[in-house]
Image (cartoon, rainbow, N blue to C red; front, side, top):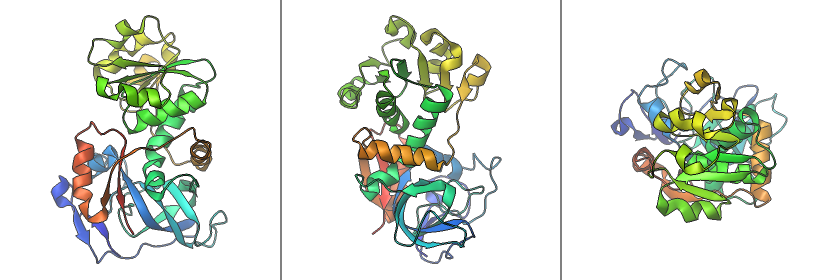
Length: 307
């Protein structure tokens, strides 16, 4: 099998294009997906550096990537939701780290996949799962966002933030996003009612009055200021810093969930959720894709594509 892989933790220099990777196993409840596109996320760099070695078993060689869109190649005997040839997308976070999505084939537990939205290309669908699920789970579970809520989304022009703005709008919220001035129009086009410049001083001082819910995607000073930004600290959610729990808020670490993937697909097909692609790279240029994401100021999502 052809794919990108690494045999040790390190910087992007450990990534190698391999043509000799073993074909992945297909377990009883596993879906083997032929990859058409794989999203690139900051967590891919964290895993490559060894930062999650204490959280999951790791087995080399490691193929990076948790986001996928493609077609079903084969299914295990216990799989009932998918058949060969189905177009699917998903967040392939297994219980260990080895078989990622930056390769021709990836074995995905069926809980990690859903049918690809008809309105999205493979590149768009491959860029959506991790960021979309993070935003959806934070807003609907941790923050219980509903009609009429004023919701503040930090780093709103990033991958998770841009999804969060659109999802919160679809839930009926009045959305306030933080971003650099060059991204203000980008966020208003996504439905943000107000946009604040994060470099213009504490957001709590810019708000005028506290909001109903805060989604923190920054940490640091932004999270420290969050109790002043919100009416009730129990409605602060962070996806970057577990210290939010000590404030009385909630930390969210995204999980695979078929229902939530289905909802993201429904929103996409209803025109409520779009997935801007910052840049698509061929698989062999994954190093360049990692470097672009690592810069930290990408507007939209980065993907690698396979024919």
